[in-house]
Image (cartoon, rainbow over all chains, first blue to last red; front, side):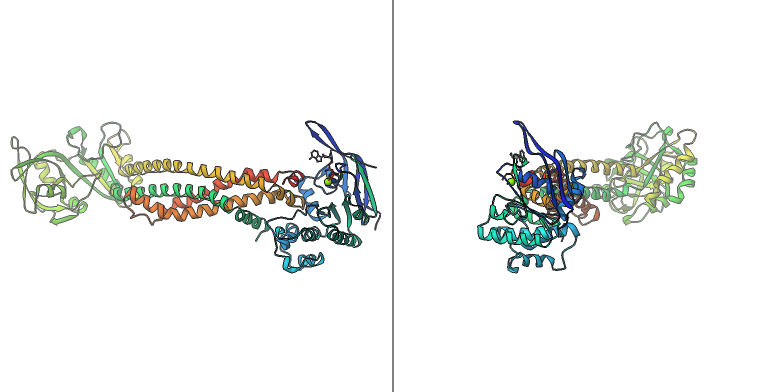
Length: 224
Length: 400
Ligand SMILES: Nc1ncnc2c1ncn2[C@@H]1O[C@H](COP(=O)(O)OP(=O)(O)OP(=O)(O)O)[C@@H](O)[C@H]1O
Ligand SMILES: [Mg+2]
């Protein structure tokens, strides 16, 4: 674990203007996460956890303040660069897996690789990742709709890893899984952190938060 | 295969019925445009072939005022007085400048009463040199006139009066002067033409004609039968420059103009019916647009996923453009295949002649229809694709 912050939020606010008035989802929030850290973000529903993760995941830009990923201010990037960052630097694991329904398990994992390298994976990396997350080769040709929740989440993890991202973002990765499968998934994520990935997990679950080095508690868009 | 293209294909397959319906619109549009175009092309070729004997002649007459364009058609300069004839000097000039482009010959012409086996009738009488007669016409039977007292006659005249080689025709009215001429030969039909209409005429040697009617050296018309149609303008210019440089002496009627007037009229009509047929493509465009908008709405969540894991906007755009392009290409090619069948039927029923169906010109509208069909689908897919690529990733992810 080095001491260089790979993620740096400085006085970040995110305001959603609604007809009924502005919703302040993040309120002058500052945060640093070191490379190789495992951070759990906790807090009640609506406290701004997903909003925070979206800023870090380059899916959104803050209303004010700055977000630096790897030293680069995402507020100054255009859509193309942000997309590139999502493709190569960040791996996103969602609560509802978010696999591409038209592609089978293998193709889902290969997809970001194809987007990045513009050629099929001929090194066996995709197959290796599927094996690593415990997907039987016989399931590789199954569409997401033909997989169980746990299997889908494993495929989603394999997909998030295919471009060797520095940062892994997980928004309630076990929220849709039973506790046994959830435990296996968390072991897998923990393992990735031990191999050097910076991991940020949004969760309500204390057992999940137990894996983290550090917990950040949010309340009304502020760290408490 | 490109993963984006794979996604487009699978999306189309997933929504089979919807895709088929959208494609159907394109098929109908392409068939409509192609078969109308084919009809026009076949009509054009048919008319061109039937009128091409018209195409390579310059008709030169004495200048009588601004040209009206179509005065040449019909060929009978019936009441031609002295003022509207060409001199033999004119003829020699024309011969000198235009001979290298083809055959130059003069003719006298009038309409007169004829009497055959006691019955009176009316016919056009031409006077031409025996050399011109044998050069210009083909015989059905008999011979070309060898004496001044014999002539060749057109096939319609021969059939109508049941004339045979060796029969006699009295020319002129009984009250004034009348002379008998022998039928030496009967001509092959020549059809409607601008230079001379021989089918219903008597073509006599020029000596006989001027003996009977007078007016030697006062030609009603000089024709230039151009060997290569590409030279027709050059021949026209040559005559114009040599005779009309100070004042208008002759008017030249270029028969290829008439042909191009007719073919351009066919062209306009064809373009018009194709444009009407294109309205069906407009309907298809709306259908494609609708299908693509539905696809974008249905796949919003998927677009959110693709964007959130690092798919560039332009890839999303490509995905939807491919989708409409695939529908367009499939529709256009099925439409093209059907056009062969339906186009053939249309040509058979509306033109009544399929002699020119298997020609490049006749198949060209299929190519045009394919291009227009594909273009229309791509254009109607453009906005949905743009819309899809501009979705906000987070909001798209939220959609279910
Ligand atoms: N697109 C949006 N438009 C308007 N308001 C929004 C939008 N996204 C989030 N919000 C608001 O911002 C606040 C924070 O939302 P966020 O999704 O970050 O909460 P969360 O902590 O992830 O909650 P949960 O635990 O339920 O997932 C909420 O009050 C929410 O209503
Ligand atoms: Mg959330």
